[in-house]
Length: 164
Ligand SMILES: *[C@@H]1O[C@H](CO)[C@@H](O)[C@H](O)[C@H]1NC(C)=O
Ligand SMILES: *[C@@H]1O[C@H](CO)[C@@H](O)[C@H](O)[C@H]1NC(C)=O
Ligand SMILES: *[C@@H]1O[C@H](CO)[C@@H](O)[C@H](O)[C@H]1NC(C)=O
Image (cartoon, rainbow, N blue to C red; front, side, top):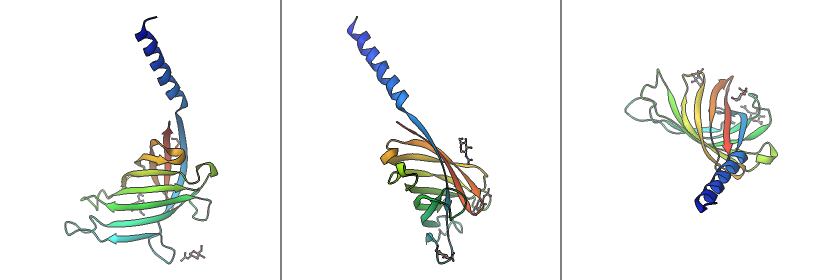
């Protein structure tokens, strides 16, 4: 057999092995962004700009992530990061750039692993979508997306990631 043929067979085998080991993981959690009261987990650190009221306002978060919309349900982890009001059409199409690290505690196999989530939370839409741009621990090289949806006072994240 020609050397080239052997090499291309080895290459195809590598691709096939890589494709077989890739896993798709789905996970749903609920974020509780508490902006008022003694147990608040979100603090506004920027009031916005002079261009338009609210434009540029920034909030730093350390929000609980739970298994169900109830804040008393099992703690899945915490969302540490921020959101930033970045739509000039703030009244008709409010958007905030969400950028946070989901530091997971539950289930045990993911404890200590993280997901980096980032994207536009276009609040006027019923279903929004943000990116999962990476991760650590069990989620090294993770890539995917999350749909975002209001459920009572919580934000539902339905995360789908592929992990090599
Ligand atoms: C804050 O959290 C504590 C402990 O979970 C709870 O007992 C208390 O009622 C909460 N306070 C408010 C204002 O929600
Ligand atoms: C989702 O909740 C946010 C914050 O309470 C609100 O501003 C927004 O209008 C809601 N979006 C929808 C589509 O109900
Ligand atoms: C989350 O997304 C998956 C895949 O799209 C879907 O099967 C599942 O029903 C969704 N879960 C919820 C709670 O919406």
